[in-house]
Length: 419
Ligand code: ASP
Ligand code: MG
Image 1 (cartoon, protein in one colour):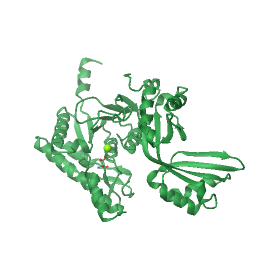
Image 2 (cartoon, rainbow, N blue to C red; image 1 turned 135 degrees about the horizontal axis):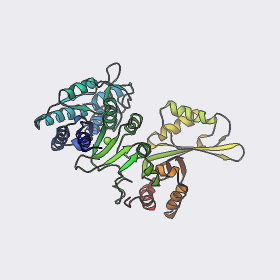
Image 3 (cartoon, helix red, strand yellow; image 1 turned 90 degrees about the vertical axis):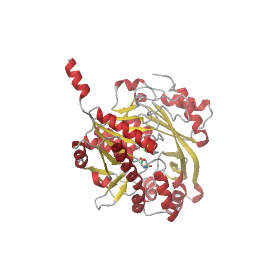
Image 4 (cartoon, protein in one colour; image 1 turned 120 degrees about the vertical axis):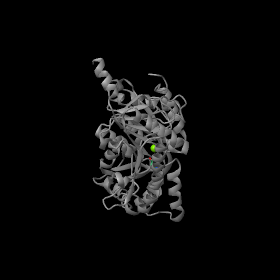
């Protein structure tokens, strides 16, 4: 590259989407600090689109108000209420940018037109119209967009599920073909384990979309899983970083050769898992469908499923599910699967945790599962169920050992060591 060309490349205007989470906009002071950061980016010559969450604690407060009126509130109205948190923060952010001498305009979900389906409280984005944003940028403004919310084809306000502003950010970045989606949070990036549990957890510099997907679904809280799906599908580089400093964070990017040399990239644990075992049901075609049909109809998500043959044409069927759904699920099975086994043989257990190690390196290395089992065995932690994918191994254990398991796996796989 010639010097002149390098100069040009360095100065090329980028389209940068910055998403700020609740703690990053938790106070007026924080909002001012974010406004200055957005303006500094714009002054480097870039186009800036900002997505903001509600101020920290606000969404919980709003949902709490609704709960005071109704135990099981109507989800359409719940979304009307919850979406106001972001309406306040975009207005404040636009004002703060203006107060710093910049130009900004706030846009709510329906004003951008973030079109979603009508699944209130868990809506999926179907389409984003980039025109209102493009107009603001052409005008030299910073577009400040409300995260978490959208609008359905009938004009109802919808929300994307807890943590949904991440998905708003990445989806807007994808729709605008932005150069990067920066996700600003209160930690420096994605860590090898939860730094609150593991003091020597290390920030990861680069992680693949696939690993991030696994980590997000297995208990890591940094990114909503759908945001990672969007990033992967539309190749949006995601940069997770802190709004409290200028440190380089973690880049979530397509898999790279070098990532394979690392056996395990992260350790996570989920809480609030439960399991149900149906003992000694008859081992014939179609029983699995009979068991899972009523659960699926009730919207209960099951996870690890293990079937084990026992003597005499009988089988034990075990699966995990969220603790919150346990009573309802067992009830449904007792009522609708009584012909498969007696109520006494439908055993429910709660207080479980799923501990997982994730890494693309395990595709090309033998013995990772063995190593995990050896590490857990050293601490006398009994494994109840196991499930694997190409790049993860999960063990279901008693929840009271979850933190110990995470720490000891983190040590055993030497994740605290600088790479
Ligand atoms: N405010 C919403 C929530 O608390 C969305 C988000 O912050 O991402 O879940
Ligand atoms: Mg979040």
